[in-house]
Length: 322
Picture 1 (spheres, rainbow, N blue to C red):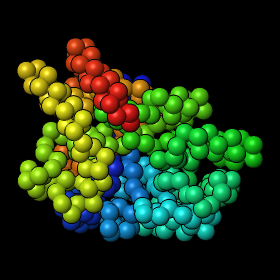
Picture 2: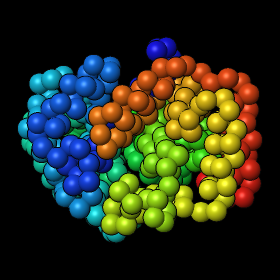
Picture 3: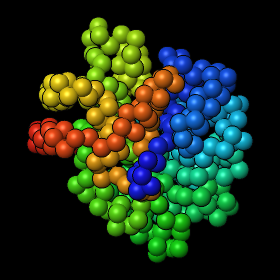
């Protein structure tokens, strides 16, 4: 694939999850072997993966030998998603990255992300704490995730004023039907040479073309009781998104392009992502990674498809800006 294209990264939300295929170190080792064959050598993990079982994904990666196998690993700080207060204090950050590195068997993380804003700890203290950890050699690049644009700008200003490590990576949700970042966040990132790593390229499974509610969701990520599925249902299980899916599916069907394929090819080849940026691919089983990478490698979409998808996005954004 073109060197000007974004990097594919494997996300770890399903590692260790009871509903998914990667339950043991042996399962994860087999997955890592397949990722290497597919040309994916970068992992994204957080201490709270899988949801409800803190540290299990990191532990399984460590047991499966991700580091000696040559994988580049990005980590996030530990948060309580219901209350992130204090999660970016100096003590919390030291404990979080120290634990992650130990579980992974890693000396230095590639990216260390501030996972979400912390309203309790002053931003200047957060920046100072991250700089101290960077000076200690615990990570190479500072990342921010899920921060509003104004806080990104403020963090950059503080870092430049104090001589601290600057954020150079931002991770946020960006996909075919969630493009709000293009309005103000992406221009800000480009001005400050901050890469964008997009998560949820299939909108948490909503763009998979499978049912996301009712009886049809049984056994899927959107089934009742699945924490990840419930999160994404809250974002996308709305009439305007269901209508958009129907429009796109009806347009794509006679052209023999599946909806998830179109979404992935659009994000990789036609979105505002480029060299230095990234796309996080998740999967509940190895075959999904194989299918997704094969779809991306089919190359750019026909222009008529790109135009049709743009029209759908315009209608979504007019009704429900994201």
